[in-house]
Image (cartoon, rainbow over all chains, first blue to last red):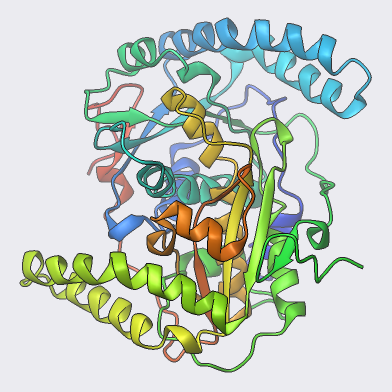
Length: 214
Length: 214
């Protein structure tokens, strides 16, 4: 924590994690706008800034997204519980997703980042540039939420049925929903995450040249 | 700047910008690994952590990527100069890209983040989850570079020809290159960026409900 009450970058990144157990307490618009102001500082391809953000607070809209979420999440979780039955970490994640499904209607705010422009069936590199013009902003949003002490997670489940998602959010055809971020004050605490050491994932000059591996 | 020499999160995000004019001075492996350690703290879909990073320092590999970059960038810049001839900001960006093309071989290090798994021609939401599992890490990398005072930019140009990129980087078929990040100590300075106010891009509950617009 810095003098002016800001969290430092290394601390925010090191303690970022998906938080799905959220308290129903309200989150003010001012906080949400503060997060969005930092989100749009992220880079976009050719500086297009072709993003739009839907801030969902209306219980009906939330319930619509919740229904879509359950449709995808329930069979996914059922399968996950069988496949990952010996994997403690995955089972913990499944439990947290289940908790969020059960408490969906109490989530104070859900943010849906969108991209203007149609997602053409174009070559892979176009897709990389397109999604690369919104996920850096989403990561800024998640890090800024972490710095505020807000819990958040990233999911695409409520948007798998794109027709339904468009209907629920009144999206015109030229605006594509990208992800769903349920947000609120956390029940639990943020803490460090564990990761595979980068030395095992880093190659010098060519793939397979594991120069950093000790 | 915080007491321990770290940059605070809000400051890093607010002053992040693409920096293409880089000095040829070396960037130590220790700095690169520090950035990558923060990159992999980012979220991935289902916690897959299916990333790999190629750190390019070999002049031959750099030259290979540079050749691919020029092939895409030169016609793109030529067209851009005509279309954007009255847009000062775009012309400044074009000039910076040209500078980098001319000084490509002097860039001390280029990082190529990759994803394991094949990019199937699957539905849009799969693409969102897939690229959403690498661009948050890329954004962490860029913000961490900012905090170190390193200049960096994000481009896909050198990878448009995927066959050539795979050959240059010796990538197996199950590893997909996502983006290219030329990195080095900046010639210029980082500074604040300008953005469309979020109030003009934010909608309450439904698209079109501009509740935050003043």
